[in-house]
Structure formats: structure tokens, C-alpha cells
Image 1 (cartoon, rainbow, N blue to C red):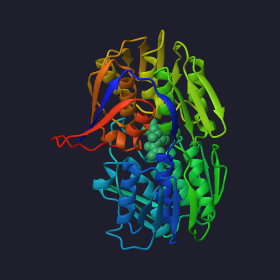
Image 2: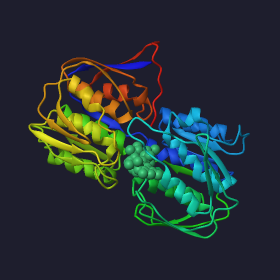
Image 3: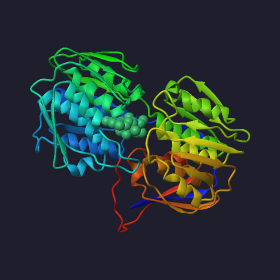
Image 4: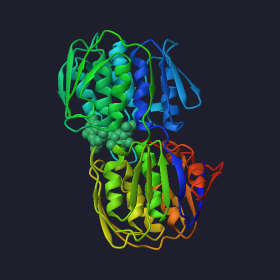
Length: 428
Ligand code: UD1
């Protein structure tokens, strides 16, 4: 099992390129199940979650071939059998994204229930209620959800919570339904918009993605398409927070600043200089870091996927910041590990009060989930001495070549590959 060894403190300075968005690419891959023509996706990040989805699609008869950051998906291969098994779903919750497209295109789907994950219970009731509204018959048995429909029929459905993958699942399912579907209280995340763009290129008729209400006029069939995945706002945001934390100066290129506005506004309020120049965002922190409170929320709020990294940042602020996690119920596990590095944080349920500035010192810490891992790497950059972060497989689910990107910015980070006994897999 791999670990990272980080020698701090260091200052991140230089230019880093944004990779493709993992959370946008995942539903785009799943969309290949909707038709029988190839999809050519570019700017697909080579991270473990994408590899898991590629394997799952292979199992479902879609072969995926990498050409650099391009992934060519060809439907029509043998299926073995036509379901999403527990072994694949347990390592990645987003496997549930095959449920909508399979039901719509093949009239049948059998997908293992994802179960709990490191950051909370994360039910999929909204995915199921939405498919039922479109006429699917849903059965839960032996840890699997089974959906059947000879052809889905357009309907009006209102999400009780604006679920990102729930919106994506229903968006995909409705493209092939008979008649019109209106989805209300949808997730507005840029990743939903990116999927709608791909589906549009495949011939789907969708209006309103990015807003609360999306209207889909079903079509009989979809065709092949080419699509470039949007840049990863969470990966990019992580490097910019790293610049803020280390008093550095980083230019993120190939980014969409509009997708990062909530975070950039907060970082500017903390005393960072933020310049948006074309497709680049330059962030520098020339002076002291001011504490600012944050409450996570669905887009366009402050993203829950940057909360852990922001907590790491606030450990170095001159004063107290309160960070409230509202999206997931168990997403503060990084706090205990940060405390081991010298952070002064009082945790009360989902509210963290971070008292800064703390003198962070290197320690042996353990990554507990994807974004918590990124938080520990950032803290290690600001800490005195050596930090060893175990269970880096969590990080590999969503960050491409993080150690080389950080090294190019002046960090001293190395990956160590141990053939140790603990080879646990992450869920999320
Ligand atoms: C996606 C992202 C994840 C991000 C999250 C919130 C992907 C692959 N993952 O996860 O990185 O942290 O959005 O921005 O895109 N909920 C229900 N019932 C449902 C579905 C969700 O109650 O059927 C609740 C969840 O428990 C959570 C909230 O809704 O409290 C938001 O979850 P959701 O948007 O569904 O997260 P994911 O799509 O799983």
C-alpha cells in the first residue's frame, strides 16, 4: 500500500495545469450505455475511479481504450452478466450511475447497493424514486437494486434533495423515455451541465441543465459523439488552497474560474490576491491569513469536496474560523488527524472551530477518504519536518499525479510503495 512522505515546510510557487474533472467524467462514461455507437471522451483524468468505471463498463459490454487522456468507448461487446457487481460498486459509490442508462436502454438493470461510505450513509432513494416516477419497477433484494421497464415514460419528478449523481442518473434515463420529463430541484453543479452537453451532442433534447428545473424530451435513440470533459474544479481548488496555505504564488491553467467562484471569494476575503487571466487563475498570499467562516452547500455554495482542504488552511489563519459541513453527516474525520499535527480544532458534530495560527509539525497520519487525504497533504506542506500519510489509495481515486504536480511547484513529496499487509479499499 502506498504512502506519501512530505518534507515541510515549503512554499508552492509556479504553474499547474488543471486535469479533467473526475466527477464530470464518471457520468460521461456511464452515458456510453445509452447507445450503440462509440463515444470519444477527451481530458479524462487517469485516476482510479475512472479506471473502476471503465472496468464496470467492460463488464457491461462497453470496451474502453485509453489514448493518452482520450478514452474511446465502444458499445456492443459481450456482457458478463448484465449487472454491476458488489466487488466493483463497493470501491466506488458512483457505480450507481449505470442504473439510469441501463434501465433506459436495456429495460433492465441490476446494480449492487453502494452501502455506507467513509463520509456518511449516502442513500440512493432519490435515484430510485425518480426511476419509479418514469415507470420503472424497482426491487431491492440480496443487496442489489433491480430496475425493469419495457420503455420508460416521461414524467414530472421533484428531488427532495438536489442530488448530483441522482440528477445525472435521471437525466440519462429520461433521454430515452417516451415523452417529456421535467425534473425539479435538480443539482446545479457544473458536472451536471457537462453531462447534459455530452447528451446533447449524442442527440438528446435537454433544456435547463445548470438550473433547478430540467426538461428532457425523450428521443428513440442516441448516437455517437465526441466530448471534452470540463476541468476539475476540486483538484484545481486544492492546489489554490495549497498556495494560500503555504504563502505561495500559483497559477492554475486550463481552469474555469466561474466554477470556482465561491471558493475564490472566500480566499480573497482571507487576504489572498486572486487574478483571473483568461483560462488561468493566479493566487498568491503576500501577507497574513485572515480567518473566514464557511458553510458547505450545494452549488453554487462552498463545495463540500473542498471543506477538508479549507479546514487545513484555517489552521494557519490569525484567529478563529468556524466551518460547518451541511452536505454529509460524517465528513470531519480529517480533524483528528490534523490535531495530531498540532492543529487546535474543536469539533462539535459537523461544526469545526479552528483556532489559528497553529504551529503544525510533521507526524504519521492516515488518510480516511479522498478529500481528507488531500487536506493532510496540504497540512504536511505547511508543517515542520516529515509527515507520512498512509492509505494514499484514497487520494489516487481522484487526484492524477499529485506528487509530480506538487513537486513541480516546489514541494518535497515522494510516494513510497510498501508491500504491507493493510490493503484496504476505499469507498466513496
Ligand atoms: C457527488 C460527488 C461528490 C460530492 C457530492 C456533493 C460524484 C461522483 N460525487 O456525490 O464528490 O461530494 O456530489 O457535492 O459526482 N441524498 C439523499 N438521497 C439520495 C441521494 C443523495 O438523501 O438519493 C443526500 C446525500 O446523503 C447527501 C446529499 O443528498 O446528504 C447530496 O448527495 P449527492 O449530491 O447525491 O452526492 P453524490 O452524488 O453521491
